[in-house]
Amino acid sequence: MIGKFVARCGLRAATQTVTRTQRRKMGDGPFTDAMHVKKNKYVEEWNGRREITEKAFEVGPDNLPAILFCVFVFPFGIYTFTRRELIIKGDPRYKRSGLA
Image (cartoon, rainbow, N blue to C red; front, side, top):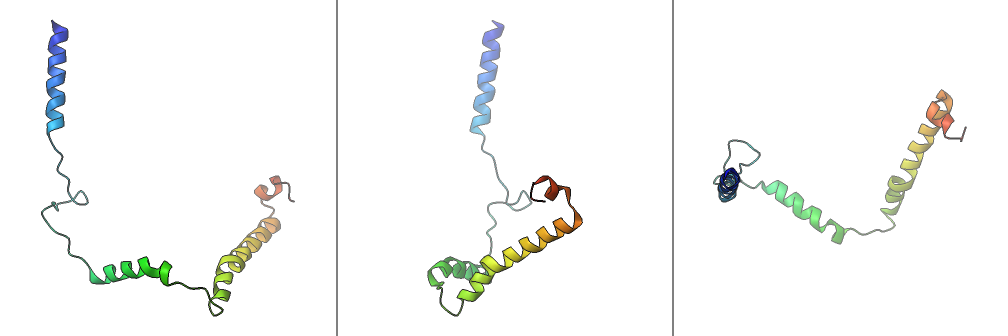
């Protein structure tokens, strides 16, 4: 008898929680769904330019050196200076690596 009562109460509670819908607020703040967001035209323009960049970007002789510098030379320079500093300071991470 107690089992039937618990089962009925549990079923009733479950159906009540399912039927209730959650009202969401924007950013968990005082703004409701009825308030509309005003678009910023500068942000929308930037977003449109960002979307078409992959279609408009071309590699040519004028921008190839800058791309190679940013992709290869600059990261290798950071690696070289960091490695040299670890060797000079005698950092334990470098000593344990087996390269020292």
